[in-house]
Image (cartoon, each protein chain N blue to C red):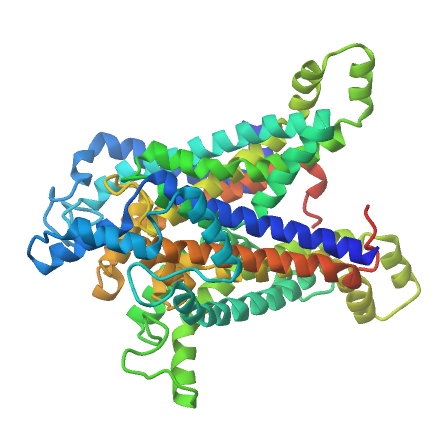
Length: 334
Length: 282
């Protein structure tokens, strides 16, 4: 039974990957743009003189990139490449490959988003639980309206405001980038400190917004859970308040939050594209922004594909481990 | 009047949301009477002036009068949101009713597409679509691009609501008394879902605006229209933050904040009407 369940879930995962690859392949080709020629013309214009051989060069590059073959063959080649995680060369940064560019950017994004997602989940869930708990200190009620309001603001807008206040008016933190302009990336304390300082502002703008969402979700679940008979029974038995709170209420109310956390972790690569663009943070979002400005299709496709695969994979893992987290759900089909 | 006051004090979120959005509407209406929106084009004012009596919101680097940009751009951004939101909820409602009322094969297909579509990060798919379209987008094309994904979420949530409604006794009675499927959908189910549909619509508009601003900030928007998102794109493009041109991004930020907070409080208020059971246990 378990094997069948896992195999079905894996089938869905493969389906998502295939759909993503197909969408990725056909949509840009429907638009009928010609990135190679556009790039060559742009470079010729930069050089300041008119190039006679543009047509020949376009053909040569198209042959090299395989763009002159019939569509179905390009599609099959593409599916083959993608299954080996080979996304071809970057058109704008030739001869670097798309894979290299993405591999450079991923750690920055995962580091920033992974930390902020876990932190805001932890803080938000705890806050939400306390907000619903009648014995929580009364000042906590005042946290509710600001959390709500912050929750409605897009990350990157809060980022703009925070940058102005904390980096421009009071120059406490660096304004831009992932590390200082002169710093050499290396594994030492100075560089780590530099990176941390640069990450604080983007992280803060994400955490402030996201915490509200987690708190609202947890509070809602807590209110429902506290109305359950077993909680009333636990209180009637005279259990300690902390036991009722942690073992009876939080333990059960946190389950949907964990589902949401897993989904949020799947969104790690795409969650803060705009925040990265605003802060010039050297992650996936900034790479995507540059690729769009240079109409570097292979990079855009590579990023979209990587993100979708990461997401599909997280969903798959979640589906497989969820019955273990919540024993009420079994591997059997409902 | 007193009844209205009583209701508002019970549902302050709704009042706050309506008030914020009304303030915005008044700003745009009065603004369009006072300001010449032609000044939202480049080179119609001296460049990079901080706010003054002549240019209350200042001017940007290309010589746009930012007050005129805001007066012209706010309705454009809202239009994208409303067109995409209405299209999304409209398509979503039809699909949801068809899926949930008739069940079977159609339901499996519609639910499958919505479920898979929702796992994929929307902004990225929109980016692929926007990149694929040749040339620059117009404001209406922008709305349609955003709408192409805006129906997924309404479809799923409305379907769930219809599924629970169709088992109610009054639907059973309607069916036994010989009403046809479409009749039951329009005269029995729809009226009961209206408050819920309204809340879904406000949500859809809000996420459509967010998606459109996202695309615009990335440089995929209507380059020659002065929408709020395009203004932020130029802010970022010209590094206005580092250069200390604070007035350039303040105006669009404040307006976008008002839009999102207004729509958010409106949803909270409508939710309270739609799901009385969710009422906050004080």
